[in-house]
Length: 176
Image (cartoon, rainbow, N blue to C red):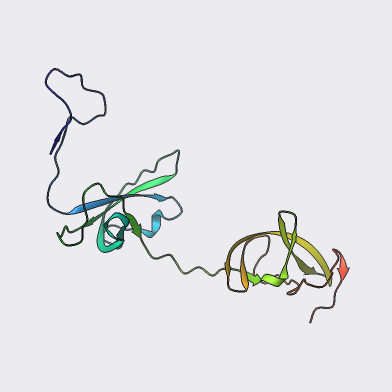
């Protein structure tokens, strides 16, 4: 219990006068981006990791999802409750991360040797009508010898897999 005001003191709007903590379950409150909020449902299981407690991971249950997001940050508040046990080192007020499995997304990747770098731009030579056309792309993570393509290339588009040889924009090519 924490008392934040004394008799005769002026109360500030929105500030608590008294804080009471129970010894029941712990609650983690996390802000979730709008793109991910539909991955959560009340009653779902979630993993909570607390770095200050030695990266301890505990399973919790989603108990509340705020239906209205913050209009400025486009984030939604999700509450995850987990039972308190005296052995894990978890304490009220510690920062926690709520881990949840990501959907298995199929990433579009290309071989790293297909990429062409000019200054800060990255591209590759796409093949259109038997012609090599330099197309600027936005890349993501690197997975071994392959690089994720976030934009600028669609699944099924043909491209030159090895751009180590000198290729000119508009050069005729013979696809193999």
